[in-house]
Length: 401
Ligand code: NDP
Image (tube, rainbow, N blue to C red; front, top):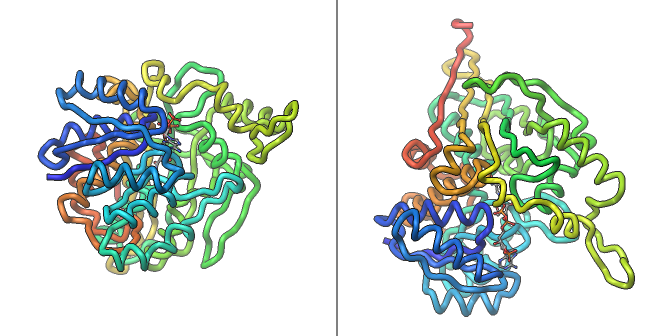
């Protein structure tokens, strides 16, 4: 039985708190801390109403290692779940090392002034975590996260070699807003407006932002949707850990309205991440834009429809070519009914809880810094079925085509 400290009380943090509270046999004591403690208290109230569990709360500036260290020493958790923003990854990892507790997050570190999605800063902690006997689990959301686990499961059970991997993220939901993002607007816009990148025969190939597209016919009544090639962080670790891989790409669907708004915002400079002078004050346009856009947590009651995120793979098994598609379909309305959040927060928060469960039950504890596919996928896949993200495998082998 574990005591955990969750840092971040936004859209995803809310789901993590609800889902951890629903597994008292693993998470005996839960503390939720964030920059604005009133949000933690509101979240604790919501969790009490839904689950009857009492969560403790605290305020913390997670950019400040000394504040974090004091909080961790005070709370004495077995692990910290970092559900704040990618900017805080390194300070929270530093505080975990200083206090001797395990670490988990859902997104890789990003410096504020550079939208660069790379694991190098966090992988550089490998020796320190290993020497301290501590585990750091990186990217335990859906993508990254479950997509890595789907690929690891396919490598373990379905293929001798995976040659082609396409991760396809479809949000077929509609929130009725002219323009809104489904998770933190600043992080989302930095990611979507970055240059595309995919991996082919050992090399990264760059594309202009959202310049490549394909149409994919999604299952379970979702139907055909246009998807755009983007760079996504899980590609960086997966190309290192999948046997025989020749090509890896990531695709995401966007509505026409989203793309048109984004284009205009880009053209007028509102997505810039560098500071500009405004009447003698330095402001970062994308941060100002975030303050105008709907809070993703407010989209819960408004969003209808489903998400479908999965891995489409081609490779060989026993000398025969085959394809496999492993996916999850998640309903925005059902997620809202269960925990008061839309499916993007839900599909991220559930895997964060399961990652923590894997660690706290000793299944995924190994000193060092790890990506999700470096652990046995089976117990994680089992828990996805139980905790609200059921998955389906569709397979075709050469002779059956
Ligand atoms: P939100 O903006 O809704 O929430 C972020 C939370 O972190 C807020 O409570 C915020 O506090 C808090 N926070 C921010 N800065 C600090 C700080 N310096 N100290 C303490 N707390 C801080 O974001 P989301 O919930 O949408 O996203 C959370 C994380 O999940 C992000 O890292 C995002 O990239 C990741 N994510 C991962 C996905 C995946 O599939 N792997 C998918 C979607 C998101 P305050 O309210 O005061 O601002």
